Structures are given as structure tokens and as C-alpha cells.
Length: 259
Image (cartoon, rainbow, N blue to C red; front, top):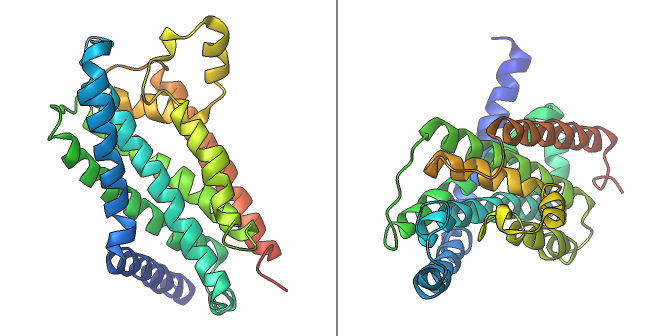
């Protein structure tokens, strides 16, 4: 292993460990809130409203929405971890120490994104355990389930990184989650099948990237999806390459990092 590669490997492990310890240190903020929120969703939509709706795609309503609720928690947690962590580094003025280090831009990016993926997966596992108290969960396609949730975590970790770079204050890191991420998530097929919508709104829904992620994840659990699985993977991978390339470009230009 060359000295440069070894140096970047050590830097990557350090960044990831820093992110993990941060997640665990403030676990009441990073791991507990999504569990409480999702529990309320399960109680309200699953126990109270679900019996009135009946079965959907051959499953109880609770079973149908469980994968979507898990994915919703993964998306918000992955995004929130990176945007808060990197913006915190900017706000505390210790991001300069990272940027002047001999680490490559891709190592810095991978370090923060890996932290977002770790938190997203941790929250996803915890919410899945919560779901077991309300319904039975059978994973029909484990590899699809794991790959979709990891790739989706990467997508929103990258998106959170971009938000953190451009944000100039704490309000700047809350605008996108509030006005963009939340509406897209709720309209991404978490609570319903798009086949219930009129043709026009089905077409509009297909412009929402979260729809492909939720349905890919649901296919992993139930073997049921409104979207072709190959298309879902293609959309997710395109977003990873586009957002990843944009992040590296911003880092190389020093956007939002230099006075």
C-alpha cells in the first residue's frame, strides 16, 4: 500500500469513527426521535386508519406501509446526519483543518457520507424492530432490501453534504428538509400505491425520485412494487453519480468553505 493510499485510509477511518462517536454520544437526538415519530405513524395510520382502508396489493395496510415508513426514517436520518455534521464543522471553523490536511477530496466526502449511511442504517434497524410490534415483517429479497437502503442512504447523505456546503446559517440547513424533502417523501408512495391515482397524477408521481427508492425497498420486503426494479436501481445510481460528482466539484472549488 502506497504512503498516499495509507494516509487517506487512516484519514477515512478517523472521519468515520468521529461520525460514529458523534451519533452515539448524542443518541437521544440521533436515534430516538425517528423511533418515536414512526411509532406514532404505525399507531395512527396502521392501527386506527388501516382497518378502514383494508388490504392493499394483497397485504394488510400496516404491512404495506411498513417498508415505506422505514425508508422514510432512513432518508431523513441520512440527510440530517451529514448536513448537521458538516455544517457544524463549518460553523466551528474546524473544517479548515480537514481541508488543509493531505486527505483527498473524495476521502473527505466518503468519510462524511459513510457517517450518514451508518446513522441511516442504525435508524432503519431500530424502526424495523418497532414495526415488529405492530405487524409481521417478512423480507422476501434480502439482497434487494439491503442494497436499496444502502444506496438510498448514500444519495441523501450526498444531498445533505451539498446543503451543508451552501448553508450560511442554521436556517439554511432546515429549508430543504422542510420544503423539499418532506413533501417529496410524503408523495413518494409511502402511504399508497400510485395505481390508485388518476393517470395524470401517476405520471407526475414518476418524476419524484423517492418513489423509486420506496418501491424498490418495498419490493425487497413484499415482492410488490409499482415501479420496475431495474428502473429503480438505475434512477438511484444516476443520482449517486450526479450528486457525488457535484460534491467533489464543490470541494475542489472551495465553495462555501473559503472566505
